[in-house]
Image (cartoon, rainbow, N blue to C red; front, side):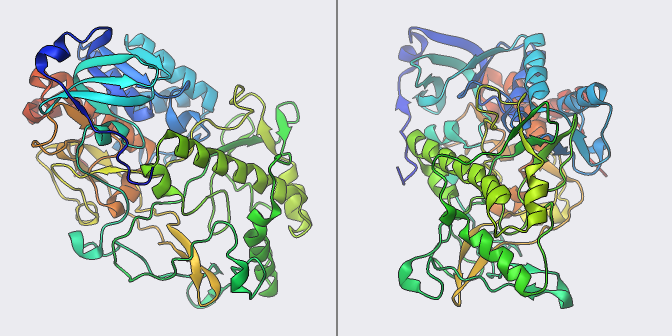
Length: 527
């Protein structure tokens, strides 16, 4: 389904909604047991509200229980208080390590810990509840029905999913992709100038010439897998591109806990031809692939590593985001399986293909999947790293300028602090060579996030908060998109839902909300 119109909300009268049979009821219904959804549910429960937390899959915790175990805490721990700090402190107490920038833990421990926190706060967690439809009475969401057939009624709802599926089905305004540079007058918005893969920077930069065609220098043979034919688009133009997706692998060298990388049944060497040509291009310039290239240096705890993407050819899969964000569940599952297959094959390529330097093959072969993680998923992470999907277009759109200028908001509900970190957007062809639309990271100081970024227009829905796919420009979202910030937003959403008169999130007393958040440890200002 390419349009993204998965279903329109079902309109019902208040009488019909009140009498809906078989509807599990709560004051607050949270969709998505991501870290943000967990924080939202806990905070609402602590404010004496009955809370149902719905998770589409069989596992909770999103990326923090699916391999993202070297979690960037934004440079300064003091920026994050409240429930974020509670979790980070538990990790510190458990493992005894951590520093000013990162927190370290294991996925399986994180899932247990999140589960314990929910249970302690009497949150009703219901897994396996993929959203199918919602019912509305005017501007009010009355219930959410899952593909399981179960329905859930609430006074207020929180969309804490990475994909923003609840808000989309509620019929609110959303966006997928990048705004034009002119939209919000952002320096870094829209399409970027294509660049070739390279080594070095500044005067030491060397561009790498990599042929994009299946048969080198033969365009008629077609493009290598993973490449788009779109070419250079006008710089600053709006488009539908999203950041590349991957999975964050958990690997180890512990022979008692290691499952070696093996050849996938659908392994196709052509999928890694661009990687091989990248390696060859390095050699032609007198440079050599680091032995650690495929694994990286993401040490965590208990002899485990968090493997993320690196520059250029890595675990990232480009040019799939729009289809995933707007697709139905069948399309999304197809993409998940394709990304999983690519990454499994990528590591088989790394340990077996003679075009990979011997030192890199031998170093990578020391590692394998952690046998004690994701035991019901063949030791592969559960959650694909959806760096961005839909975004709300709400009552306020947070932009790059707000972040850089550190705009102060009277309705500030927490802080963000992470670089403008845009992973690869488009991998394509320029002048007969592989080229990429990618932007270097831009450092930021701590910045305030206003309550309004979680609110749809008052003309659309009155009892919905969005705590992950919030109302920001694409550029601003490249900073917002980290789990601790999502948890800050989740805690604020949970508090707001609990304080909303009759469930109407537009009528929340913002100063009381700020007081409640400060009382619970949330950091509201940095200056």
